[in-house]
Length: 425
Image 1 (cartoon, helix red, strand yellow):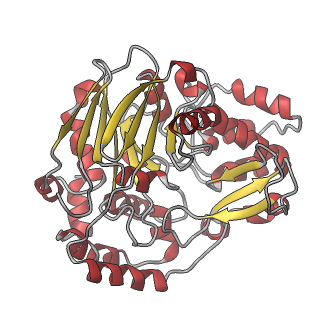
Image 2: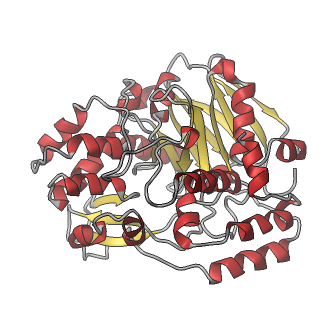
């Protein structure tokens, strides 16, 4: 199709080492629905191959506010049920522009491989030399091999290769929102990574109407830095103040007005702007829950950040990992790395809140009191169909119906909350 999705559906059979393409028709968007709704239809269609499905929302990669969201979808080894994890930062938009509308990865490779998606070309690359490497090493190796530092790398680390219950895929060097153990699904498939680079173009059906509509939404959108808004919403300690002695800069995901991702430096002065030759100056913290667990457990800020780094390197869920580490504060870097490697993994993930964490099926742990539970599910459904960050939807105060109004000039599709609810019935 010629609007909002660039390319066909890619089907990767790791058993045979072959790939094929299926036309991504407008009919699929209109019947199943865009974004995650199409992903769910593909998951059901290819269920015998125990697939991992990658995709993006209708507005992902556009000028719409917070249009950063793609998704990974598969059967969670933690819950045994289908679960979704966000492809945020810049991975979701790169997925959208890679030349494939959706990617279905089936079966298991006989040896470690990674999938290289670029400009409508799909290569299955031998990754034997990457076996056992952590996610930082994997990202560096793939970018070096391909000669492109802008490649987005979704990878599994030693935790995923060993089948740890804490396994979580990483996005480049940093943690992701994968609380469902999809990093272990990658490990089981012998899929070390998916590398993405896209230069595709997205064409709206009514370009000027769509563009001006997104600008209008952006102009009224509050711009935030750090985790203050999130912590206030969940009535948690203001983690920004705790992190402040190490904070170097804030970074947003693609097209998001909220620069909540927080880069901390602990291997050099956090105030240094220019590169000083320190190879690994620090860490990008992509969510508030994990540092909140460690702060609540009595950790000092620098060793806590080193613990989060170790979790990212191992390819572990930083939230569940931090929850396990919280009760035993450490200071020595070597002891921290050893403690992380020794984590066994539990089913529990969520915020350090006094009330119980409940699970919302496909979307994992509900974040109280960011919204009522029904509101949390509705925001995730809308977010994953549209490609808009659900946290932005909840925290910005945006009227979701205004996002739905963009769907017609974008792709000639009419959407509303009722239609989206039907997609997940």
